[in-house]
Amino acid sequence: MLAKRIIPCLDVKNGTTVKGVHFVDFRDAGDPVELGKQYSLQGADELVYLDITASHEGRKTFLDLVRRVASQLNIPFTVGGGINELHDVEQLLNAGADKVSVNSAAIRDPQLIEEIANHFGSQVCVVAIDAKPEQQSVIAGLTRNPLQEQWICYLNGGRIPTNKNLFDWAKEAENRGAGEILFTSMAHDGVKTGYANEALAVLSGLLSIPVIASGGAGTKEHFKDVFTKGKADAALAASVFHFGEISITELKHYLKKENINIRIDNLN
Image 1 (cartoon, rainbow, N blue to C red):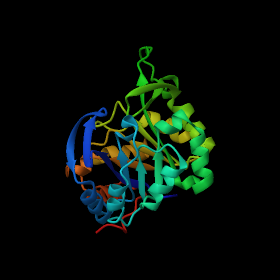
Image 2 (cartoon, rainbow, N blue to C red):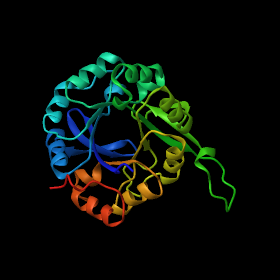
Image 3 (cartoon, rainbow, N blue to C red):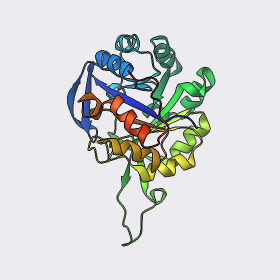
């Protein structure tokens, strides 16, 4: 069995790492170059860098900043934001990225997933999905099945709803060649009450590619739950790491004691 992965995420806006709640109300979280270096040294398994306003602003990811972050890392590095064509992918890989994360552009043009997978390999293509459940009536006393909920996918950093359902779109992305799915529950983002484990478990059972969970980390127990209850292959988090609430070293030792298959040979 592959080891579970702990992945810090750098949400970058105007060259600075930021963190918000429900995709809004951002606050400064530090220099992405310095944070990336720290996480690499602390034993993070991978690092994700998302230029969170690139798609909304209709521009490309800032390549120079990506190069500077990549120069400080010795772990796999995924970059997303403003990727619309193969040339964008090529530039990011040349700047030091190991994988790219596509979201809005893939929903608008699903063939982009196939193009990336065919040209660079499925392992390079991470399809990010930002989604939240639309409220529906629930019969008293019955547990709601996430597949019966209409989890709606959103574009442009959670700004624009689409007609795509989380589970259908994730399966289509896999079929088109995605190597991983990065699922962020917008309802859980930044509130630190735990991941969307029920939906994650359904998603993990539906797909044969790895699922990265995002949105909701607040305690070490939340990471344990996302691996045991949510069946996720990796857990992504931001503010708990950025603001020193949980250290990666502490988290990994805790998970190991809880019998989670986690790498600790890379800890300092």
